Amino acid sequence: MNTDAPMTAAIDGPMRRLLRTLPPTTRGHTVAVIGEFVGTISFLFFAFAGTQVANISSNTNTGTTVITQVAQKNPSELLYISLSFGFSLAVNAWVFFRISGGLFNPAVGDQCPEGVTVGMVLIGAISLVRGILLFIIQIVAGIVAAYIVQALFHGKLAVSTTLGGGTTLAQGVIIEMILTAQLVFTIFMLAAEKHEGNFVAPVGIGLSLFIAELVGVFWTGGSLNPARSFGPAVAVHTFHTTQWIYWVGPICGSLFAVLLYKLIKSLEYESANPDPELGPSAGELGKLAANRNGRVSSPVE
Image (tube, rainbow, N blue to C red; front, top):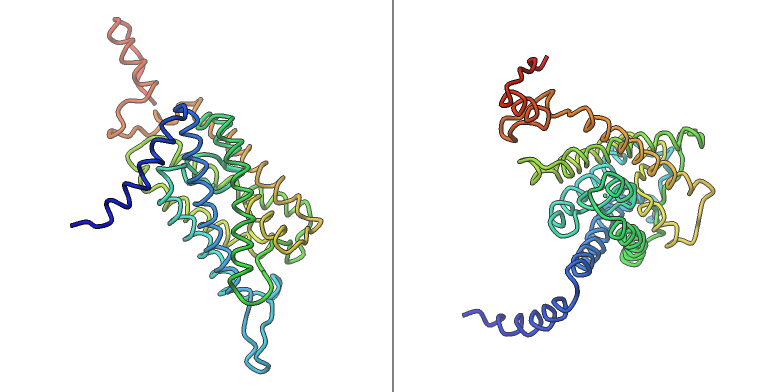
């Protein structure tokens, strides 16, 4: 006998009745915002916590803790941070994919991570209203996640993104742009495009962030996400003069990914390498229709 059923029903009943009073569109936005808020906090909490572990090394001689600067990190620390972000995104995107799309990033959009939200709006995967709501909630969630990590773990919060290795401002913007473009384009092709492999899209997206972090952590901190950089800056009350890089770079990278995606869509990329499981492409359907009307079409080269 399930003794929890009455309690669940007591909570679930009023909540469902409340949600049913909302218009369908508003209800959808509400669910997406709640899912994205919780999901972004979860994603960044584990990513920040892993970064905090890597950035604070024990001094066995004095018993104190020392914050390891980016320029002093060894490859194992960089790998640890990259794994923390990549795996956290993969797991949480998989969990929240059906709720909000698992974006967790203002530059991307719904069903993917803030640079991500902008991108998903521009390709029409989500509406402008939902994009604005998700953009705001992702920024707020990034701040909350940073404060949680700061409160739970000993030592100064050491997850802020800064330029390292002699990286110039221009180089920093371009690095962030390229890495974000790669991540956003991965999201477009694995999540925005509908195919039988959608259910494993979060794995590919997580791996995409992982390889981007392998490159980016040393040079720029590997942000690729305005919420990831803005949250810790608010928590430690320190805004570096390079903070703008982590907004301009990811958003420009997202715009580049949008242009590339629209280009290959306009060229009907499906016809270049057709998948029999997905059926004929739009171009192939046009040729079939022409043949039925008695016109002979040339074969696809």
